[in-house]
Image 1 (cartoon, rainbow, N blue to C red):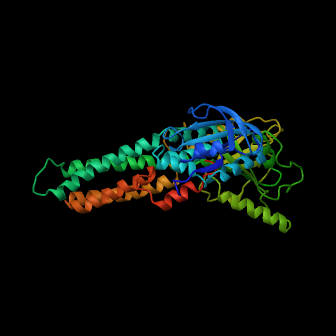
Image 2: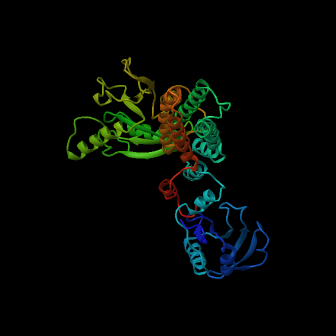
Image 3: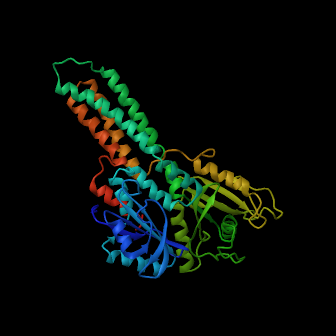
Length: 439
């Protein structure tokens, strides 16, 4: 991205009461003055009332000079009445005055280039925007505050210290400086490797807080799967009928359960299909099971033979949900999974269901929102660092200082990719291209 240009974009979503047009770059103030008339814009960070000539809209303008702005460049913003047409006309006027359209993520990219954010914090901005629950929002706030960056930087600095010891042996072999022993060096390497593994282990929690948990509702026809979906959503999303086989396709909905973002998938009843359409629905149900993080197997208390062969061999937690327990029924047979008893109609037993769901998600008790949780990109860099460090200790034991130094530098560079210190242009392009325009 060309960081010397002045760029502009609409920085708010469509359809709101207010729209914000953001301009950043060396001509930001000049561009806004060309499209907006009013007084007081020379005073930084003060909202000034004026008029946008292109629309006649009364609008507020504010100037935030470099370096005390989001991007680190001069930034000027216009706050106008909401509406797609008014915002578009104002933005077009900014283009006519000399700004160019911002690329996706370009404002945050400039913040990264200007040292306002490191790469992990920039990714947290995207997490903040896309957060679908309170837990994801809290995690994004931790990352944006620099919690992960501080851990990574501290770890990388320790490796750089070890690297300095190793390289000094190569640069001054005859000086006999106060070098650390091989045991001390390997102790530092082992501690760093342990920290790398500790960070890598947060991937699972981070994935679930950010992306949510895939929970698939399955079972035989007419067991009450759609009723369970509706009860968990708190609204009638799926058609409920006494006729077996009503659901022919998968239905996906997002909901927050016990603070966990969840993608609920209701599926067609699994049985010997009666017709091509139902057969396709059953196949989609089976495919959904293979993508699940947790399976809610709904079982009718009156089903004399509740077994479901499709559950055999699944590597994810399965909760057997006995439904229709508000009706008189006999003793329930033992099932090979954790079982709860509910009534979707009466909405009873749901506390026990959600308790079981939490245990299934976290493989135990409730997990607090972590201060640090890596994403897939971070985890890949940590795996690389761990692999390199595992090979370093043998080189130190053999006093192969040059090879050891090369490996330690590789590990430090892998960690630097997380914060952006050693990230390639391709990595940066990939990350910021996923941002929305205006952010």
